Amino acid sequence: MQIGSCWFDIENKTLSNLANETSWKMPAAEFSVIEILVQHRGQVLSREELLVAIPAELRALSLLTEAIERIRFYLGLDYAGLIETVDNQGYVLHSAPKSKTNNISSIPFGSISAKHYFILIGLLLGLLWMINLVFVPAMEINPMKKQVITSQSSNISFYPIFTSMKLKEKYQPQIQSFIKSIETCSKVPWQNIYLSFSTEDDLISFVLKRERLGRIEIRNLKQVPLDDDWHFIDKSWLTKVGICG
Amino acid sequence: MVNQHLKSMNYAKKVWLLVCSLFVIIGICIGLHFFFGPEDNMSLSCRADLHGKGVKRDVKVAIDIKIVGEEVTLKYRSFESGTDNHSMIMKGKLEKLDLTSMTFKLKLEKGQVVSNLLQHSFSNHMKSVIDSSRLAMANRGPLSLDIHLLEIDEKQHYAIVQFSPDDGLWGCDIKDNKLTF
Image (cartoon, rainbow over all chains, first blue to last red; front, side):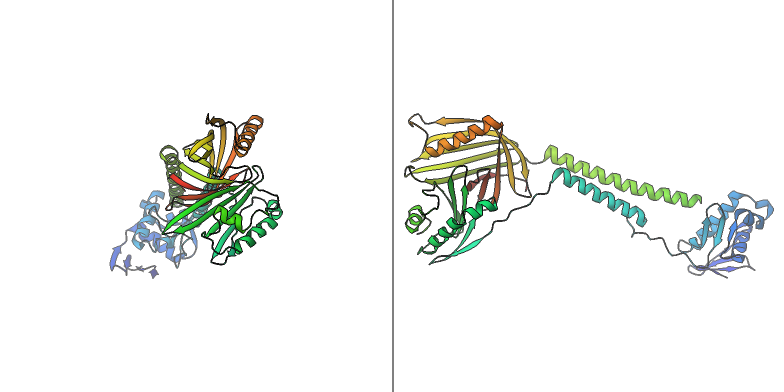
C-alpha cells in the first residue's frame, strides 16, 4: 500500500522508500500504529484507539508519540504531513499531502505565513507614515509659469512671479505693456527674464539671466515705479537699464 | 498538537525578531542623522542696480545671506561707487528648511544699522527698508522671513530666490552650499 513515496508491506512489516530505495523493517510499535492508521485512512483515530493497537508492553503515550515521529521522519519532509495531528483528538493518515498553507517565499529565517507577512507590511507602512508626519510635512510646490516673448532677434523666456492671483490680475496690464515693449527691441541679450513686484517696498524686481561661453550670467534690477501703470517702461528705458541691447 | 504549537511559537518569534531588527536599524539611522548629519550651510550674495526717481545713477543694493547650521545672518546694504552707504544687519535662526517647497523659513531676532559717517541721511529706499523691519520687530517680535528657492544651479553657482512677505526677487551667487537636498 502506497503512503506518500513509500510502500507499506503489511506482510513483511516493512516500509520502503521508493525515492531513495531504502527499506525499514518496522519495530512492533511503529508497525501497529501505521497498520491501524492505514486501515482507517482518512479517519481520525484517538490516542486511546492507537494505544490499544500497540502491543501491551509498549503501550505508553510517550512511546506512541515517538513512533509517530519516527514514521514521519521516514516518510520524509514532503510526506510527513500525511500523518496529521488533530488537536485534542488524535491522528489521521491522509491519502495525499494537504496543500501547503499560504507561505510567503523563504527568507533566511524561514518562511512566514501570509497573515504575519501582512502584519509586518502594515507595521512598516504605519512607521513610514509616522516618520513622514514628524520629519517631512507635505507642502505644495509652486512652479514658475513661463511665457515666451518674441523679440526682433530672439525668443525670451519670461517668468512673471506673483504670490497671489489677486496681485497677478492687478498687474496684468502692466505685464502686457512690458511684454509689448520687449517685442519692439531689436536685440535682447538675455535668455530669461524674471519679474516680481513688491507692494511692501514698492519696488519692481527684474532678474535677467543668460548663458555666455558655458557660464551663467545673472543681473538684478530694482526699479521704483515712476507711475502706477508702468508707462515709464518703454524702449528707451529698456535700453537704459540694459534689458534691450 | 505540541508540534503545531511549537511551530506557531517559532513563527511568532521570527516575525518579532524581524520587526525588532527593523526598529533598531531605523533608530540607528535617525540617531546618526541627528548626531552626525552634516550641518546645513549656505551663503548667498546678491547685487542689484537700483533705479527710480530720486535715485542716484550709480547706486546699488545688495543682500548677503549666510546660513551656518541654525544661525542666520542677513546683511542688506546700499552702496555707491563701491562704497557702503548704509547697512542693515539682521541675525536670527533658521527655523526650518522645507524641502518640498524649497523654502528657508527664518526668524530674525535682532538687527542693527551701520551707517557711513560721510552720508547725511538714508536714501528713501533704505529708509523704507529699515523702517519696515524696525516696525515689524517692535510690534510683532522676531521677524519671519521666507526665502523661496525658485531656481538653483550648484554647478553654475547661482540661485534665484524670492523673499516673503515682501516678494522681492533676486538672482544670487552661491558662495557656499552644503545643503542636504
